[in-house]
Every structure is written in C-alpha cells, then in structure tokens.
Length: 356
Image (tube, rainbow, N blue to C red; front, side):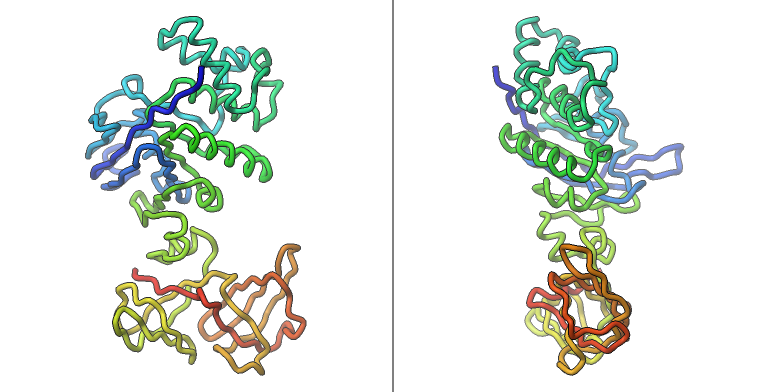
C-alpha cells in the first residue's frame, strides 16, 4: 500500500480571532491556499501565524469570518470533524509507545482494519526513511528521527490538509536543512496541501510555493519567495525576508513607470512601483552593494567602519550621509581601508523602491 495525497484548498475570508474580548490575535485576514501547494505563514513571535494555523486545524474557533476547506465551510466544526493533520513543534510522541504504535495511533482511532493499519503504518515509515524502526521507542531516536515519526503519523491519515507548526525549531542547523528538504520532497511527490508555520525566513524561502508574511495580527504581504525577496512592499517585509538596508531617497521624476531616484548625490533609475515624486525609501540587499576605493568617484561616498571575514564572504559596515550601510562581498578588496573613504554603488539588480 502507498500513502495517497488527498489535497484540498484552504480559504480564509475576513477571519478575526479575539481573545478575552479585547486582544486581536488575527485581524480580518483573507487568503487562499491552492490544493497541492505548500504555503508558509512567516512572521515574528506574536504576529498571529500560529493562531491562524490552529484555526485551520479547528483547535481555535474564529471570532468572525469564514474558513473553507475543500469547498466546505468548516468555520464552526471542531478539529475532530475536519480532515486535517498537524505536526507539532514538540513532536508530541507518546513515550510509552513504540514508533509503530505512535504512527498507527490515529488510524486505530479512525476505525481502520488491522491489516490496513499495519500496511499504512509500514508505508508511512518507509516514506520518511524509517523502515525497520517500528519496534523502537521514541527515546531511542535522534531529534530528526522523532520529527520524521511525527510526520509519518500525520501522513498515514491521508489528510486533506497537513499542518506544520515550527517543525524544525528543535533541530540543529544542519539537520534542519536535511529535514526541510525531506518535507518538501514528500509534499511535492504526494501533491499534498501543506500550511507551514515558521519564523525562519531562510526556511520559508527554501520550502514554499507561496509565503504569507504576517505582522501585528495582519498580513503584511503575500507572494512567491522570489516576489517577496525581490520586490518587498514595506520596510518590515524587506528586512524580515532576508537582510536589507532601508535608505532614504528622493524621487525626482516619474515617467512611464520609471523613477529617477536621488540618494546622497547619486541618481539611479528604478521601477516606480506606484511611488510618486518626493521623499521615499528604498531597500537594497547587502550583497547588492558595491564598495570601491573613493578614487573611483562612482556612486556616493562613505567611511568604512568595519571589515569582517566570516569564511564564506566578507562583511562591511559603512557610515554614509544616507545612513549606516551593511554590505557583503564574496571576495575582500585589499584596496579598502577601515577608517578610510569608500565609493558606494549598486549591482545591476540594485535597490527597489518601497511603495509603503
């Protein structure tokens, strides 16, 4: 027997969650998750992402709005009446049960035959690379293996929607990378609908078809990983989806959707993105800043305050009239001297204007 995908879409229509009649954990949130895709809810602690996930699961009830899964209104349905499985941050394995018993637990409660429970359990363990581990106890497994058991337990139920709540936060960096790749591979191979919560932007960029960035109980921006990285709408999104320098500038002219932008004496042409003439802000990634000796007389000038070698690249801190600038370069430039002047420019991809 093989584990089957049973993907369904998820829709939030103006959903609000209020605690204690006063605190809005989620405020008028609307979005859609297409069947068979992996969408990540990303944001800092307290932004509302986990509450949103728990409302999909039915572990929290919406105060207002409508939640639809697979075309069915589930807003008022409890978790037991929703075809949804959840993988928790803490794994939530039963320590007194074997791996096989943990994985088969939900199937037994659902009334499946003994043969089907056994076949699905074996298929689930094989899918997560734990074939032959069924007789072990959770305490005999590594953190990464315990997380795989939790994933297998959710997969064998063949849910319409699979939910992950910070699933990798208890793993070290190398193991996080490995397990997130495994989760993504399983999701794509089975065509699962997955909603994934994390505060780790690199993790979100690596696994997602789309990302929903949340801040202060609302959605800050939605889009593909590349859209959010290349064209953030706000300073918050720019800095949360990878590092960014937020610099003041002046839009001097806008013609045919292109803006002439001045930043401390240097003029560049950028996509206007709805920004009109006058003061504005732009975002530029550290690896898209070019530093050169001041004698190059290109760009605008600053003072190099720090140069740090971190193995894979160099990191530079520069003081300028436009503000403090953080830059990265694969190779160090021996011509640059800490305490000395530098010319600051941008790569071809360069900065982007922030609409908000």
